Image (cartoon, rainbow, N blue to C red; front, top):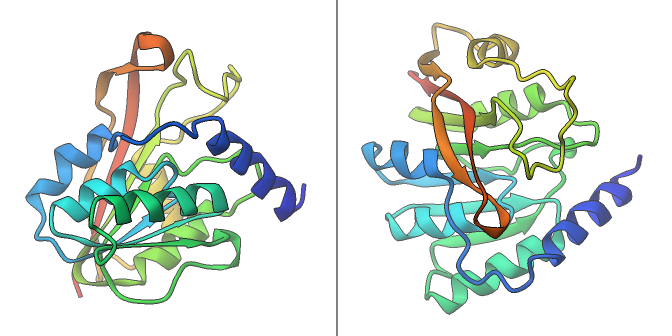
Length: 208
C-alpha cells in the first residue's frame, strides 16, 4: 500500500472521532513523566493530541507529529483553544521519511503501531539520536490486544521491551536502559467497556 493509502486510513480513523474535544493522555505517560524535568519533547504519532496537551500543561514544549492531517489540524486547534499554542507545535509528518529535526529531552512513542509497513526500529533509533545528553526515549507498546482494538489478530506477536531495545542497536556507552517491563492495567474502551491489558514499557536514557 502507498503513503496515500496510509494517510487516508488514519484520516478516516481520526475523522470518526471528530467530536473529541477532551482527548485523554495515555496512562503510562502520566505515571512516568512527572519524574522528569520538563524541557523539549517530541511526540511521535500524536493522534488525538491528549499526550501533547498534557505535556504542555506540565511545562514541556512539544513538537507533535502524525501522518494524519486531520489529527494535526485538530491538535493545533485544541492547543490554541487552551492557550497552549506557544507550547505545542503540531506537524504532519510521515515517519518513513525520517524524524523531525531538533534536539529533545524526551521522545515519546505511545502505541506507535500501524497496519502499514514501517521500519519502527529505524524510526525509534533516529529519534534516540535527537535526544540531548540526559534525555529519554519512552516507548509504550501494546503487550496484548484489547477487545476493542482495531487489530484482533490472534497471531500478533508483541515483542517484549528488551527485544525492542536490542533492535535499536544503541551504543551502551551512550545509552542505558532505565526500565523495561510489562505492567498490566484496567483499560476503558468505547461505551465504557473495561478489560485488563498489558503494556510494554521501555525507557532508554542518553548518557552522553
